[in-house]
Image 1 (cartoon, rainbow, N blue to C red):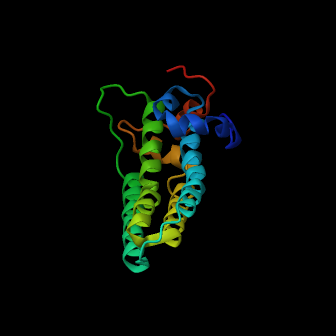
Image 2 (spheres, rainbow, N blue to C red):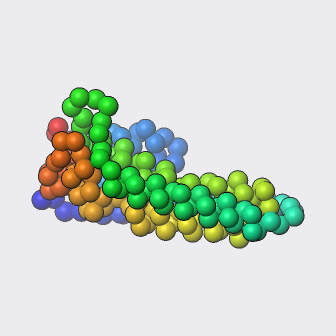
Length: 182
């Protein structure tokens, strides 16, 4: 069984994940590509907060309404992530490539985890201000580093829920391998 390639290898792929997500499908190890997608949104959070601070808009604050909007979207995103982590994973093609299924599943989890962050950015312009934006970024970080984090547990979860099921060790070797041989 291959060792974990680690998170540091994903750092050079952050620009690719931010600007050209489809190129991540060809990056190997696939686990590093999935982690780059997660790190890209972790980096984007503080940049988003700095952007709204630099805008300095003076809108009448409405922290309660916008806070509920961001909190609600965060709760719905968390619920959706938990549902995705527990459901079956099927492919639209007859013989799917397990590595592509893993990257796709990790990408969907990452996308759902970023919902509070993006909703907080919109709510900034509705009167949420910097506190609500920071709240949304924090919620996204919790989801990105919690249930949506690509790692050994996600690989095991995906392998056992694939149709047909795959051994977690086999999928781990496929996603942690530097080159794809399937």
